[in-house]
Image 1 (cartoon, helix red, strand yellow):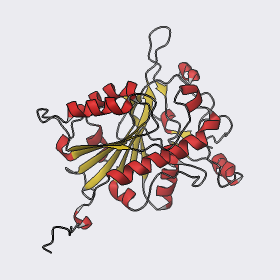
Image 2 (cartoon, rainbow, N blue to C red):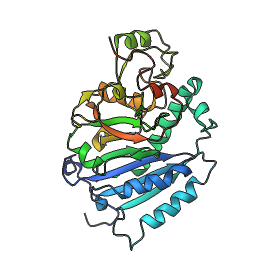
Image 3 (tube, one colour):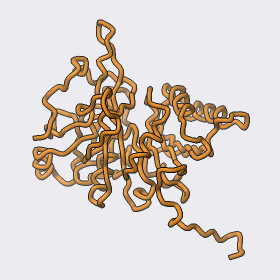
Image 4 (cartoon, rainbow, N blue to C red):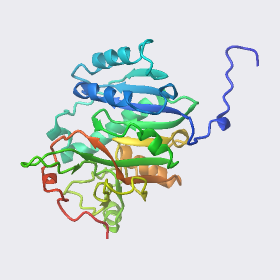
Length: 316
């Protein structure tokens, strides 16, 4: 084929491996201006070769200066004189008309969860389909408000060679004596319980089940209460739902049509719906209970100051 308008892509040569594979880091952003300085500090320190990493961001429905700050950070990071620049960086703009506020109380209220999770799922899909290229073998979903992680996080995750993998997500918070209570953040990574299955059977098919709220007592077993960060960080557990703070996905999983439902799929949406869809298709969904990535403390879980769950959080 001699025409310059014809491109031949052999996907059989692009199998996901544990070697030097191309990685796509995806981050949806909305009113994320306060977090971008730390975000770029952390990804700049990643030990995985930066010339094998592409960055892509979706900026939408912002009321702050997220876009201009992002542009400035990328201009600095991707400068030709910066030896640590990444292979590429892409900014995608898309407003969805989401009017839900970004303050903690409104964003994490129970009534906001269905519409919020559907909206986040939609934005993830727009970002994924705009940025994924044939050469990408891994997709790393990373939230903007991570504050601490090992620099080897990509290598650490890749060596497990799982279809979908998440770490434990905790946050630093200090009590009156200055002791870090190591709060548990993400209640979207869980193992299903018989109570959860029974509850879903009684729900309307269009209802999105919001996890971690008293309105839906699922008694699921949460990843964030399984872990001990001082023990084997490579320990694996199977999961039925996952959160979106930090996810490594084999790109072929996404290519096979497994995405983030912006509707109720098995009464879940966004990342939890993604996990349900992946498991239905026969893919592995795995958590690392002893491997901790630290999220900003959003302060909505006051009971975490006690250092134990609000109620007995274990499957029966």
